[in-house]
Image (tube, rainbow, N blue to C red; front, side, top):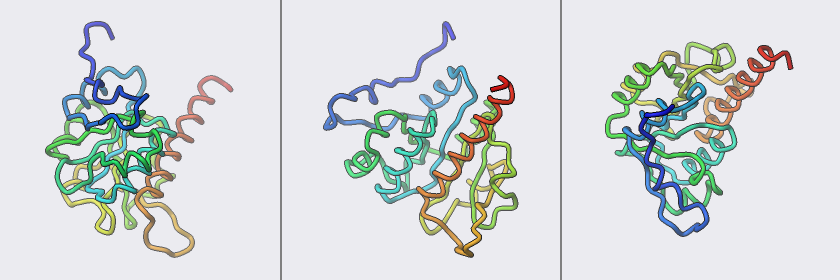
Length: 198
């Protein structure tokens, strides 16, 4: 929209040089990005993911799913390391990665901007496929082995579980994130087809 401030994407603009440093953006950049979107926000929040391989895989899948930004806390989570960028295979250059000081506060701010927060947990009270993911949403994933922190979970509008007929109680965070993101993609595309009659 005219007159609106643009997020500082300069730190993500060195696409041609894989050795160029890419640093995380901030919560201010996140709010500006969300405010300037011409479509419903589609975000991925990672609460304490510490393995750079998992972060890289999440960034790669987020880029493929059309996610607008990946958000993580500054403390107790991995940043954009060389390993994360390598595993992301270009995803780190395509999707803004934003590290915030206070994740619970950021989640509250996002809710005030109209974003619905869908947390994920193996004992969630809703099945993922029964939740409307077609509008403005942020999918919230917990850390490896520990899941979402209590404060993070408390900020979620819904806590979903992924059905696992194989009776396995958890998935790798990047695999679970991929399932959730592409369920949102499926719902968005189905909704668009219904509206356009395609």
